[in-house]
Every structure is written in structure tokens, then in C-alpha cells.
Amino acid sequence: MNFWLTIGLMTLVICVIAFSPLLRKTTNRTAQKRDNLNKAFYFDRLQEVEREANEGVIDDPEQTKRELQQSLLDDIPENASEQPLTAQKSFGKVWFVALMLFVGGVSAGIYWHVGSWFTGTMLEMSHKKLDYFYERLKNEEAEPLSETEMNQFAMALRVELQDKPQDAESWFLLGQIGMATENWDMALDSYAKANNLQPENLLYKQKLAELLMMSQDPKDKAKGEDLVKEIIKVDHTNLSALRLLAFHLFEKEDYKMAAMTWGMVLKLMPDNDPSRATIERSMQAAMSMLTPEEKQAPPEPETQK
Image (cartoon, helix red, strand yellow):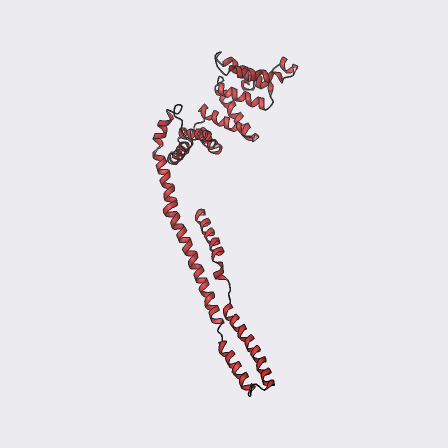
């Protein structure tokens, strides 16, 4: 309803701008010019007649003046300018309404037969390729999807989710596509819906927490931190959640908790893990920020309380 109301208002504005001359009051400028010329000629000729009469050139000046007056009256018909003006004004309004209806009808017809058809066809074609995209995911590392294919995949998933809004897995996959295409709003909305549908799924909760903690809004960061703590409360050995929490604590300048959380990560991490060196450097950086008193009596990790 709002769409068609907007289209109607836009059509009206365009018609007013384009066809406004039809609504303006106009005058018969040609007739006015002719009348002014005839009057000027009359007075000029009248002066000549008087001059010629004084010189004795004209025998009957009064007869000549009457002929001039009659000629002027013949060139200015009575009420000649009023009727055309009224008729022109009336026809201008009729043409304005007719053109406005014509433009509105043509615009609506073009959209109805081209715009909505094209959009519906594109959505239908993308949805039919959903199985193809699922197969492509199995070979994503060897043959990654292009950006265009990612967008088509997202479109197909949106169509699928209109019929299956409770499909948490599809919402999560749509969030993954949003992350890959840097469409953060789509990713955040999709992860949130997946988490709401399956709050016990720690992977869904973790991905939502990661995205929230990337935000510059302190409220989003706080929500992300709460989600990470929920994960750790369920799974104390979740390395991804512990590492995420440690980096977040370091960012908050809570160096004591950050160092202890990284210490927990190192204890749980295999010795041959390639990221172990990075975690050790991060823990050392946090330790270097502690005061001597803090190093002597580090508090218990908050996640263990």
C-alpha cells in the first residue's frame, strides 16, 4: 500500500512540474499585439490627416477620420479575446488530468509487467539453484564461490526461509554468507535468528558473540561478552570462546583476567598447535601491563566463579 501511494505521489509531482503550463492563465498575446499596432497606426494616421487638412491637401478631413475609425473597429471584434481565453483554460485542465492519468497508467503497467515479473523470475531462478549451491559448498576449498554466486546463494536462502522460517541451519548459513560478503547487518540478523531458534547450539552462539564483539557499540560488546560466558559456563574447555573472551578482556584493559584466561587456553591447547606461540605472546603482553601487586595475587578467573 505504501509503495503504490509513493508511486502515486511521485507521478503527481512529475505531472505538475511537466504539465503545469496547461494550468496557467494565458492571454491572447497575438491579438493584443495586433490591437496595439492598429491603434498606433490609427493615431499616427489621424495626425497625418490633421496635418494634410491644415495644408489643404484633403478636402473633407471629417470623412477621412470616420473612415479611419471604422477601419479600426473592423479590426477589433467585440469580445474576441474573452471566449478563446475561457475555452483555452478549460481545455488545459482537461489535458492536464488526461496526461496525469496516462503517465500513471503507463508507469504502473510497465512496473507490473516488467519490474515485478523480472524480480519474481530472478528469485525463482535463484531458488531453483539452491541444491546446486549446497553441492558447491562441499568443494568450497578447491573451488570457492564467487561474489556473484554468494549473492545468488543468499537470495535463494531468503526465498527458502520464507517458507521455512524455523530452519535454524539455513539462518546460520545465511549469516556465514553475510560474513563472507561483508554484509554485517544480514550476518548479525541471521546469526541472531539461528541462536534464538536453537539457543543450545554453542556454535551459533559463538558466531553471534564474535560479530557482536566486533561492533563499536559498547552495548553490543557487552551482549557478546555475556554470550561467551554462557558458552564457557556450559563448556569450560571451549578454546574458541576462551580465546575470544581473553582478547575482549585485553581490549577492556582488564589485563589480569586476560592473562589468566590465556593461561587456561595454553593448558587446554595441544603442544603442537600452530597458534600456541601467538597465545604465549598475548599472555606475556598482558602480564607486562600488570603491576607488581597484581602479579603476586592474581584473581580467580571470572568464568570459574
